[in-house]
Image 1 (tube, one colour):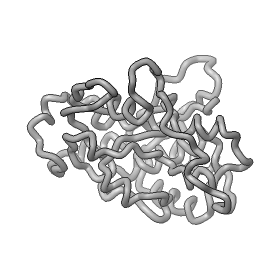
Image 2: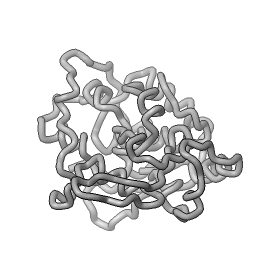
Image 3: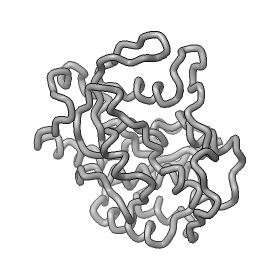
Length: 243
């Protein structure tokens, strides 16, 4: 699956002087465009269950079944989050672990996983955030959209697994609260990031997440994804099925 590694590898000190919620320079858009059209994926482990070879974005979209959405019966509490995370003893829940993992400059961590300082870049709107309280951890495919797209009703355990999925770096992403609230539970037919240079990566990550969790798309969503793919000929998708 395409990874949100566009900023994780940048030197932290290069961003330390940037103000809160500043827009990146124009040269950054070129970096994003270049990264979005490259194959950015987890290493494929020979023989590992569910690992797929890189697919073109078009081919990956074609692997997703098309079905009508079904929102009736959805409540957010069906998807238990946040749980104790990968390390139950660290005092940080899944949300805080994702924020820590995506920091460009690590924050200080006090008792109760209270975070102070740190630097992050929000991919949706291309802004720098220097206060963890102004971050949301977004489910890349929103929980309501997951419910709409489940081909058969999921168990409570599978829903919790999705809602706290750190087995892939794509399912959860730390972004500015403002961009996440703008997105809400919309799919790519209804919402795209304001940073247009991120659209190829966004579409590929959305598709990879749907494939990872065996979710369907509706026809409007599919057409929107195909439209984005027209502008992303070099973008590829690698995913691993969730267990």
